[in-house]
Amino acid sequence: MHIDIQTAEAELAKKLDGIPDAGEIAWATVWLEACGYSGVKLLGEALKDERRTLDLTRDVLGLDLQQVSCAFLAPAIMREVKANGRAFLRNVRHGLYMLPFTVRENIGLGCPVDPSFAVGGERHKNPYTEKLELAAVEGLEIDDGLWAAL
Image 1 (cartoon, rainbow, N blue to C red):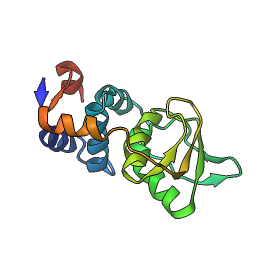
Image 2 (cartoon, helix red, strand yellow; image 1 turned 30 degrees about the horizontal axis):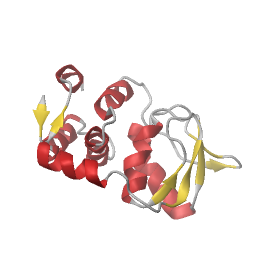
Image 3 (tube, rainbow, N blue to C red; image 1 turned 90 degrees about the vertical axis):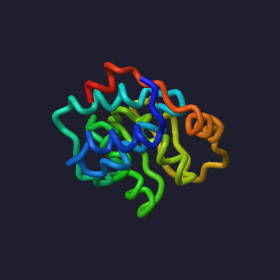
Image 4 (cartoon, rainbow, N blue to C red; image 1 turned 30 degrees about the vertical axis):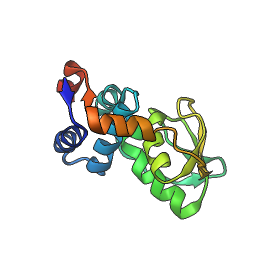
């Protein structure tokens, strides 16, 4: 399916209506797709999870995400990191969802495909600008079956 970024984001936000931070989740999913990552597939997996929320409480090791998907937690994690500084995340599921938020806020990110990584510090470059600009002009190709399953 060929779709432009704004339409994809708006349609996805409607599909996610009722989920906290639905607009931000829709934006991040489309951002991931525009940058060549499988945001729609990851979100489809996350939507099947029973648990979507978590009280983010720091302990001596950082934040234990208890395998709750970052598709749902990333906006709250970013608010927590902005308020309290760098955090080490562990028991991470779908950590790639942290990437759009950290790039937007110029915040450093460890390896988001690892089960544990750090978020915080300063990002010094944005390697995704060109991909996002291209997707804004040419639109996105999203798998029909994955999109319909959301």
